[in-house]
Image (tube, rainbow, N blue to C red; front, side, top):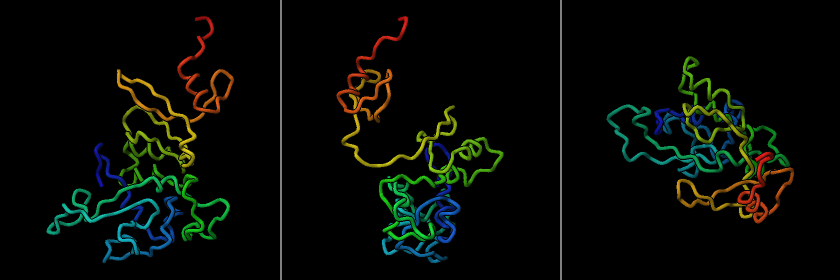
Length: 216
């Protein structure tokens, strides 16, 4: 499963890990409707929804470009894997946790809490060796965190907590300009100058009319 930066992601390893150990090893939330796969499904879970890959928020479709005359490989995958928002932002419900986190029901899954157990760095480094510098970068990510640039050689390693996923209309947006191009930028509420703005108007005022720095 290569991507644009030449890194083969380990989603295939995670998705073919037995369901009884998948949360323990990867921190992902199993799709409650699925069961373990076998050779007939290439190791992927058997699911009533044919596009479920067996993990909440991870989807699969048949690869129209697959060459059946060649063995399956990262460059010739029989299925294409896609990751939706829920893969990171759906998590186990802290008010109704499952008895076994490897076997949740839908009642145990909250769609907006943020998955604080997801080992994304491990998923990124599954096909790397410890001697690879990229492996060391990804292994530094704590469970429930991700560096959303996902570029291991940009000189920045700043994994942040996977956040809750709700009340977007109440979060402030700013109309900024970058290189002369207008853009709408989302920003969470922040602390500036000792005060905490609570509404978009306040945040906009602080963002565009910042007081001069002391001594300037």
